[in-house]
Length: 68
Image (cartoon, rainbow, N blue to C red):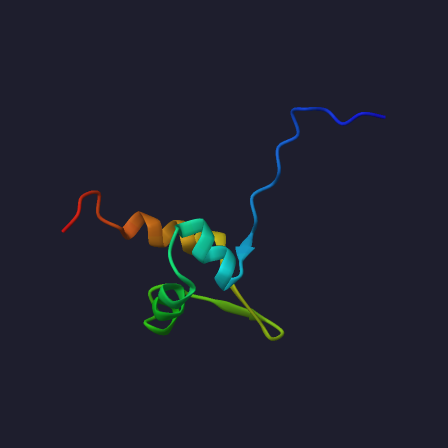
């Protein structure tokens, strides 16, 4: 049985710190600082720190269009 070529992967609902850093092209240190400053809101699933995808999108919407 072959797989169709048009399968689209579902977007993640949440990201790890490493995943959020990769998605935003930032360092994990920067993600940690944004979380500590309450700029990005993270949640815990047990001991795993997760950043909801909508929180990443909200953060992106706050960024300027041009360099300051």
